[in-house]
Image (cartoon, rainbow, N blue to C red; front, side, top):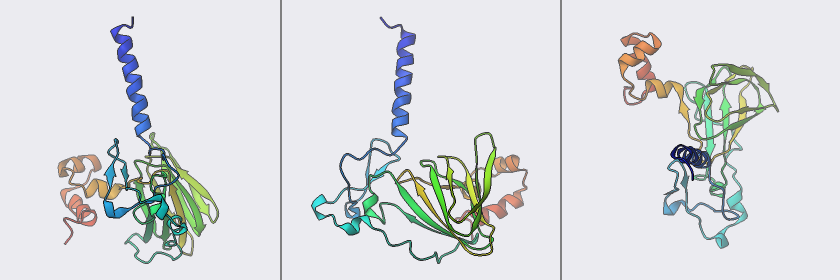
Length: 226
């Protein structure tokens, strides 16, 4: 007969295993599931997973498994000198249910990809062109960084803050892949100053004045920008 304490321990271990299982994309149960966006998205048991319904497999063609949208360099650059083309089942239906997505990033000379993280995916970055200062910060605030050159690859563990800066004398191009079809992204400046956190808390956390907080909010919160 198990004691009540033992039963609670077994229950805790079971709950942890379930949580770990649900923390990643579900495995596919068929060869492929070409997304059919016209029917909308459906939620799985885990609310973070959004899976698009499949179209009939007999209607699949080779074109469903090819994406040609990353041939050209980015055109719409942010004020930090960054242009990103993200690829997921919404614009590449063949990825649906396969647990992956990817992106092309073009960074102008001196431009940056500001500190951010992906809550649901590890990222692998491959430098196709240029020279990029790149790195991530672990949970002890230790930074792992170096300058990556053409052909080199760096991995950013899931959920850890990472960043990039073009330190070369030509535009840089990188390809990033994720082990989730919906990795999510939180950009640190926007998350802090563009989310509506109480101003007094921000002043105490960063040692900034009310005027400085206002300036940061105008920059990172589109609702306050005029």
